[in-house]
Amino acid sequence: MNPNLFSPLEIRGITLKNRIVVSPMCQYSSEDGFANDWHLVHLGSRAVGGAALVMTEATAVSPEGRISPNDLGIWKDEHIPFLRRITDFIHQHGAVAGIQLAHAGHKASTQSPWKGGKFIPQSAGGWQNFSSSEVSMSDGESKAIALTTEDIQQVIDDFKAATHRALEAGFQVFELHAAHGYLIHEFLSPLINHRTDEYGGSFENRIRLLLTLTGEVRAIVPENYPLWVRISATDWEENGWTPDDSVRLSAILKDKGVDLIDCSSGGLTAPTNIPVGLGYQVPFAELIKAETGIRTGAVGLIVSPEQADEIIVSGKADLVLLAREFLRDPYFPLRAATELSYDTQWPVQYVRAKRGKKS
Image 1 (cartoon, one colour):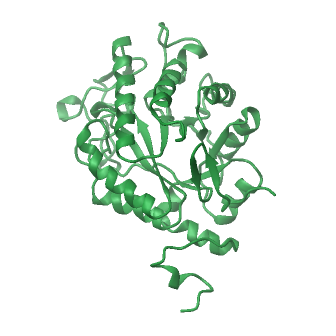
Image 2 (cartoon, rainbow, N blue to C red):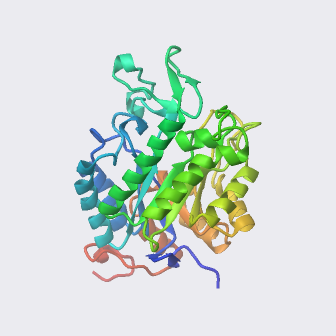
Image 3 (cartoon, rainbow, N blue to C red):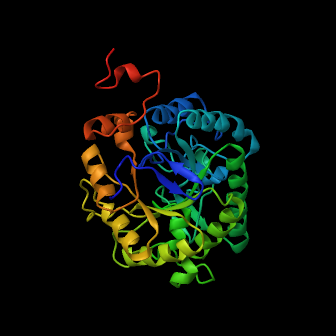
């Protein structure tokens, strides 16, 4: 019998109680990288709502790796205690806590979306940003600086230190953010990587940073904890990163100890030909799973229980990761179980509201 949306999934030593994951969603609600009550309630309510795995937003491994001044961070030990409070709460309510480790690259030093989302130059309180190659910024004056090999080693060290802190904070699933035009993606894609050293040019060189980070993080993360990588499966641009590149990369990552590919797309440029619609990115998860055998997570406009269940039952992906739908409904898994007639455990505090339960 094929698994369904409420079948458990074991990855290494971690068992997810169903196939529904809270996708990383930036909240732009931190000061100096610290988690706070907003993050506790935001992430904790999704655990109460029945998700199997609750992922943090993109969590910066260094101050300059933040997208905005209000990003969550894990670049210093002082960040650990409140994150530990959050992971403890998530685990107490039957979910698993996961963290997405990230560096924004040239997309760093920008305003929070509701403040306009514009690039913040250093003269206005921003910070110097970095990329695989030099990039002109939207103010017409600033440039993202190409990382030197010494800078790249510092980035690697920052990811390693962040991984150690994440373990202390109680996280049990680890994801490297290599998508959406952020730093690692900026190395992968030939649209922006114009380097002529060992990190640029050929496919093998452009994936070097990600493979190095994968090896270093996998060596730190306990054998019984999963390691994931989020990729943009295509740039949606001619001469950019392609689905075939993603298949090739995913096969290599599988051999390097990665357990799941979280299959998103785009984010490096703003192409006009993206066929946005319900489940429009699911075919990437299906392709990579079929071609490589690695587990995949499907994302992108997954909005209904029936749609999510079909993805799992048909074998297109092993997990579904929801973002906006979880913002609309923190209790999506409980509702989905009711609508699909799957029995699932509710928090004891909420059982009185379970459909079919006599008050």
